[in-house]
Length: 286
Image (tube, rainbow, N blue to C red; front, side, top):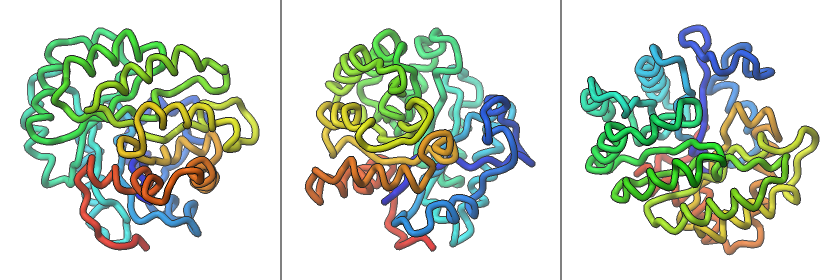
């Protein structure tokens, strides 16, 4: 497996205001060593760091810190999806120019924490298209209410930019809000330049034990919309600790994907991530 959505929290060096009222995420750091300990016994060949929505002043420093971590041969990090601010022209191209030296394989701007107008801004669209010209994917993070009103418009406008929809569009599984999400996910999936990340789902379930049965209708719908060749797996660690936990989510994933062929499972668990983020094969992480 390649974990295409691993966060790291360096609270001693960076600020994460969004975590302040979220249980265990509000305290301490979450490091490569912590991740390695929690996934022990599960076959993770490597990870892609996903920017962690640090405070605006810190987002470039976060990427530089992670780049230093990547130099440790035991980190398991194959690349990073760095944060960016495509709605701001000043310095945007310079930040992209720095990316190769930092091991950047893609970019993200969390768009569900800002007004919807940000995603509709022509400057953001123009800068996303410049990512496409560089061959770099952009991860999308939207709430279900935004899928039709905001995300679909962006997807249609940026039709030459490879896009990755995180967390299957953040479905409200605990509330059973299936129908609108399913309709809007299908509309987005009709655009072949959009991938879907199988990640984060147990955090959207009702509190309590988590199992594959509760998630199967949602995952089966995403699979029907995108197909294995356009889906990639991620843990969303340590946010996943609000749900099933890392080891639990890995086990649930294997159960959910068991009905697929070996080739289809391999695409979701590893192949699509390698293709989307253009990852090399460094061998097994320790």
